[in-house]
Length: 239
Image 1 (cartoon, rainbow, N blue to C red):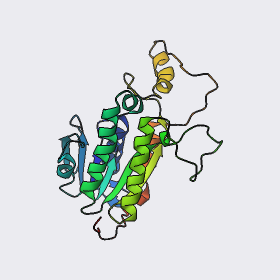
Image 2 (spheres, helix red, strand yellow):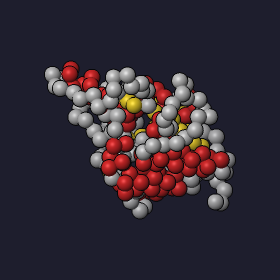
Image 3 (tube, rainbow, N blue to C red):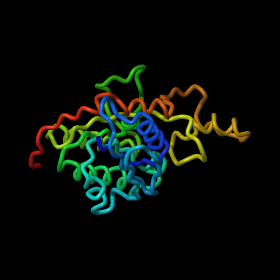
Image 4 (cartoon, rainbow, N blue to C red):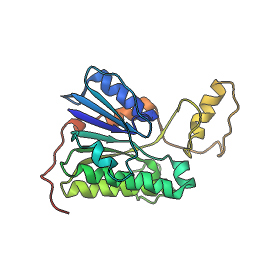
């Protein structure tokens, strides 16, 4: 199976690639080829061919070039994080919406399985004790709105038989290594990471705030389900 990973140089993307190379398969399907895409050229070594691509999917024609070899399984992780998407309105929508739609439109020509990395930011307060599948999507940020739109696009393209899509709403991934990024929830990593490095950390919320977390390893586990290896598309139809 030929697998494409966008956002492959990011934290979750890097961990996902490590898992794919280590396992050599996804579900019960052996991996025959891996294509890694990010703004900076990702790197990885594997016992099968690996293509490293530096590309911005929101640029005209970039998504078409990325899927020209028709990968059977696409993990779409590329995104501008929450705080940055809120601070830079145009960039957030260009990357998180325009780039996502460009990828979906390019891939609809042959209907692969697409695993879309969404976020719990699609929800809005007040939250119940348990968020069920039918809980309303009322995002409170531009990032949440962009991810919610991506989910709707994926659902509609899949309904029409253009893609075989599944969306995974990831919680805050913690602890994020390295310097802080511009995610609004980044302080959750900081209050653990910084003290371990002998640095001060600021908690900008009350200490009774409840939140949802997953480790990078758990996030990869959410993405690598057995079902990911069994695409089930109908023949593409005209939109």
